[in-house]
Image (cartoon, rainbow, N blue to C red; front, side):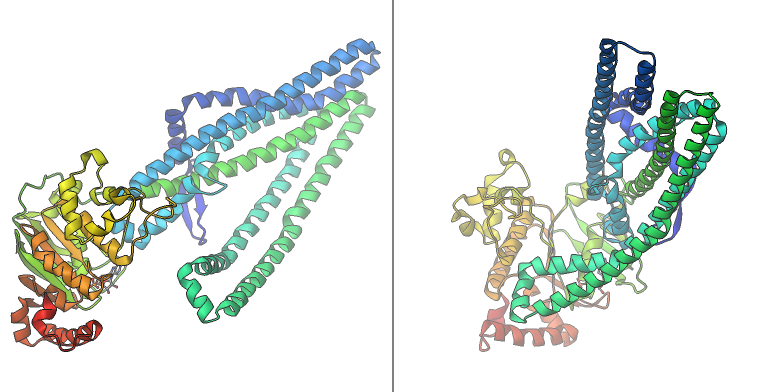
Length: 620
Ligand code: ADP
């Protein structure tokens, strides 16, 4: 049972090590909830006793009648049997519930494990298609909806064990009667199990074929419930298109369901009926013969018939639970594959010193995994403490990628990035992250107060002065203080009903305030003004040299006018630093920077409605 083939959803086969996955899940079960393992010991006897007693009661009753028991004695027998039946029927669901709680506990633990992993995993892996594919697969283990293998493993093991013991007990009873009958019933069960297997394969194919439909329905739901799309849906009268699209998806789905039903009727249902006929026919044949030859009594007939039914149920349950355990192992394998992905793999354990004297890119090239063309090509530069560097260039030039490499999210494909002369891979990753205060284009806010979103610290650790300075520099102080709950106003509407609604520009300013509050030695602003209007943008530039004082700063933008206050400007094109200098030098070069500046300042003036404003006024 050590190794098995695991067929993936796309039809490919991979090795599945059942033993290792079983060991992993059992070990965790033992560690997290030892006590619940005892439930297995209680559950098995009661689960076997219930069908055995159900088979035995008619025999006992008929024997008692045949022996002319007194009514009082009969009543005592009936009462005793009923109490015993009730007790056994009560124990089983009770233990099941207890085990379900243990299963849920394990599911939560697995969720916590995967959540921790998601936040620690190498950024490169997180962003890669391979990483997100592995995460999607791993999620089923603990996040699955109705069926979560991390939880259901407990019940599957319990039922597998009781089915195995039940099967042995009932087989022993039947062997006493007729080993041939036992063999015929086993063959009948085998046919039924084969029917289930074919049914599962049909279901598997059905889900695979239905996946595009699920994706389309998901798309329709997502798009139609989105308020943003709602505007277009109304103004451009998109309802007929969406309704036709939905109709075509439903029709295609109906065909698939019809096919599944026809296939099931031809395989699973037919085999199941045939297996039932074989089992019961053989049972009647052998039992009637045994009664006629007087090797068993009529009450024994009833008892053995119950045992035949019970034996079939145990055998089918055993196979079913084994396939459940295999499914759990398969999901567990995906979970473990994800957990084994590298986190902070390239990081060393050096501590970054107090002063960031110099950052150097030395012949750095970088190609994204799965891509052919490099995004950065032999980029070399050095930036010293307190310098302000602007990186400009058209979209796709590689500016953000350069910053991602600087932050240590990706290792260079070629070359080195050095901090104070040491390759950044030598530094402890968490320690290294501390040197950056960054504003990226994507927003992430926590469902906590505005102030906590800026400081990330609990209220008692907040530095009120630093917070005020950060908010003032980001241009948010007055706005926030005018709110009814001021800085304590909650954020994130999905979680708090009364959360504050910030515009895109305000959210961008909040992120800036967060970066400023962190007071890290290196400040990175990646398109920090993209959501601001030109006037607000201009005000921010005015403050730029104040809030970057003493810090090494990187300012990334595709708007050239926004970078002229930086001492050094890189104009990036096609993954290279195509031009370098200060604003005046770059203009004097009359190269690509100059051309871009000319084009942009024309449109910029139009946007501001200030075609007559001079270059100097526009700049800062
Ligand atoms: P910029 O910031 O200058 O607009 P980027 O650094 O974001 O440019 O992107 C440079 C190139 O790298 C683009 O062609 C972009 O499509 C590609 N790219 C960006 N991120 C990824 C990624 N995660 N995987 C593959 N290619 C990427």
